[in-house]
Image (cartoon, rainbow, N blue to C red; front, side):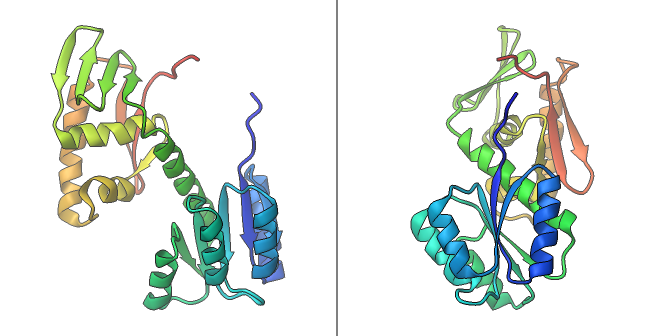
Length: 235
């Protein structure tokens, strides 16, 4: 299968760091376009289509915040990650007000940046599947609109709203990690301790609802979240 590579715009004025990051992302299968300042980054964005932008905040000619504002004027959806040596709360807030999806303070590990990129791309794919109403989960058919779970075309169970919302996120990210914090913010709005415990209870309920199909399981991914394991649907 010939899958088109994800294209990333990387704007970083530190030449050594920029080249290291570009090389690392390319070895991970991404098409990474490195630009040395905000103006060059802006010109590149107007000429090319990118799936994600990684912008250093402190850059010559045009800083990362100004570049992000220009990018948002052209494209409201493309994900943006800021890189900065600053860790002041005001700067972080400014970044999110401009529509940032994530924020990494230097120094950071390349593995951490990769994890953030993969996480955001999974979210984007999840948003694209939000119009899907029914999901085939092994021998189950889940109707997210009616909040029902049907087994082998016969027995139908009615789900609560929270059960349905959580199963929708798991099904939209089937066989991929559903990040715990992301699910908490989407469904419970806040990722505090009590909501986290509440989600654990709902995960247990969903496991019981899905137990009739031995090929379907919700597994814990330590320190990250959950994964709905199910047979791949043949297209």
